[in-house]
Image (cartoon, rainbow, N blue to C red; front, side, top):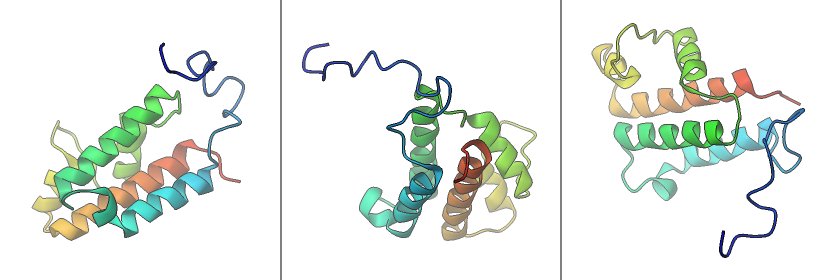
Length: 125
C-alpha cells in the first residue's frame, strides 16, 4: 500500500500466542476509556446517547478488526450482568429509557458496560 510504513500491513494476528507486544495493557485501555468518559465533550461533537452508542460501536469494531475477543456477544453478556438483558433486537438504551433513566444516566451506563466488557475479555495485570 502506497505510503504505509514497511511491515505495517503484514504484522499478522494481534493475538497470535497472546497479545501483541505493541498493544496497550488492559489498565491502559481502561484509563484511556475513562479519559474519554470524563471528557466526553472533547471526543464527541454532541454528547448524546446516539453519539456514545456510535463510539461504542466503533470501539467494538476496532477490537474485532484487531482480533481482540471483544464483540457484541461479550458486550451483551456484560449488559446482561448489569441488569439490561435484551431478548429482542431493541437497543439497550431503549430499555434504559423504558426504565426511566435520563439521557445522562444512559450515557454513563453505556460506558460502564463498555468497561465491564473490557475487563471481561482482556487479562488484568
